[in-house]
View 1 (cartoon, protein in one colour):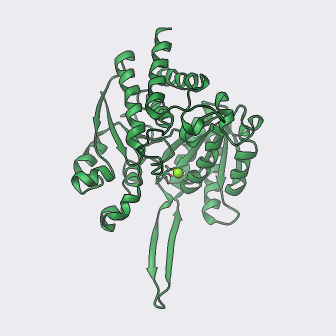
View 2 (cartoon, protein in one colour):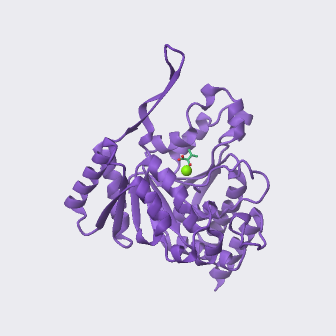
View 3 (tube, protein in one colour):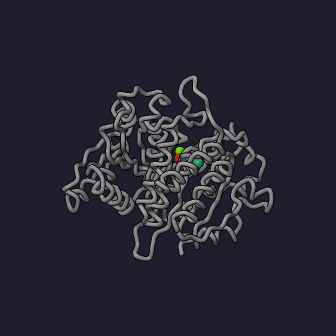
Length: 367
Ligand code: IPM
Ligand code: MG
């Protein structure tokens, strides 16, 4: 039986995950999806109870789980706890230690949400891409790193973008494999005109393509151009693969194609393995401290992340489709949280959005 660990975390995390858990429960009760669920405190709530952002017990559950449903990390309250206790980011620790190097960020323009994007409808129309972000190396993890004080009293900072060809090859492979299940196109994004990092990135992607994936159409863009192309003509992309920080930035940019960053799910996966793979599912928006506790956050990014869990951890793509359909129907019926409200239109709260998704699932299930 699959083990699912729920870490709601900081900010709006608990509010949105509460709605996702109703959906999880629905799939357990109505569709016979089998799982063992456990919930643990993470982040500021864990600090308040245990003086630890993630206790060792929780870490053991992280290691033992097949899937983690993650809410969000980040809060102004981190400033108040000792630096030593927060030096290591616990989300990045999970990404690294579980070797979750494949981060899938699908970007789909839902027709009903065209009016909540700042991009023109004819630009959005038909957008359906997946951003494959390398998640366990690159600028986020490279050493040396840190701030030092120089003899003259000024300070100096270093971060390092490190990749081995092995790390590049395995994420490129994930992108090519994914493309074969879609429209068979990969766009690889780098900064090879300036950084050696981008040169090795491109060489490695091209070599793998030549060797094993000649049937997939491969193109390349520099990351600055890629950002512009995503808002100029997002329809041109099928699968886009890129470095960790570039993927972080480009996925927020691409979120405008989905109408709101609140709609954006993600899956972080380790290498496929016969014994099963590790996975963490989270919306890409973060903790949004400015609206935390107000009951207005959009739970759909988190709910759609659970759809990715149904597909990738439970191997039940038809159940994932059912959930995606329910979400599309709900927003098409005009039920919108504030971030995706039609201009001048009414909006619902987080719980009402959860109500609407469960109601729609019931309806689809009975139909
Ligand atoms: C994301 C987030 C995280 C990141 C933060 C919360 C560490 O922005 O998943 O995109 O930078 O990777
Ligand atoms: Mg981000």
